Amino acid sequence: MVFEWITIVVSYLLGSISFSVLLAKLLKGIDIRQYGSGNAGATNTLRVLGKGPAILVLALDVAKGIAAVWLGVWSGGWGSWVAAVCGVAAIVGHNWPVYFHFRGGKGIATTIGVMATLCFFPALYAGIIAILSIFITRYVSLGSLIFVALTPLFLLLTGFTYPVLWTSLIIAVFAFWRHRSNIVKIAQRRENKIGTKAKGGKRVV
Image 1 (cartoon, rainbow, N blue to C red):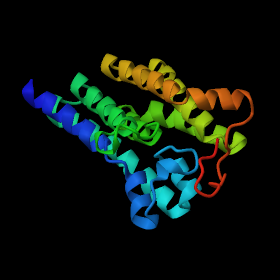
Image 2 (tube, helix red, strand yellow; image 1 turned 180 degrees about the vertical axis):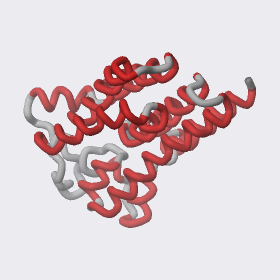
Image 3 (cartoon, rainbow, N blue to C red; image 1 turned 90 degrees about the horizontal axis):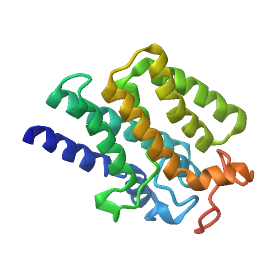
């Protein structure tokens, strides 16, 4: 049991590595949380640093989720509660990173890595619909919410284990909570669309 807890803690510490913050500091000497939307994630990296850094951040954040789940699989086996909790721990680390004063991102890229590893096809189906919604509306936040909302539904339709199903539901709650301001902005049609540029050193609101 001790080893399982160690892997969960390591997953949190892995998730706490904020590649968006590190890359912005390395490339421009800035704290990306003071620019654009103030979010330490791939979308704000695109807004502040451009496409190349954003793609790199996206890939690394997804990889964190994949690595955390596989740590749990190594510890507790495939489909185990440990694998699921390790995935959640990585998302918690991304959202509230211990290395960066608990001010992180919203966890969607890491969520993609976690869910694609735990349940590839349900995540794929939800991801296709989410990408189409982003293409149509240009709201990344809306696509993110669609992804986390639909993944549990596709799990119910295609078969599931209870650890994975409950993990998907917990992650959905996390995502909706972290995106609560975005939900209000979408309803008011004030949400920033993909491609919006940061304005100087001020956060875009």
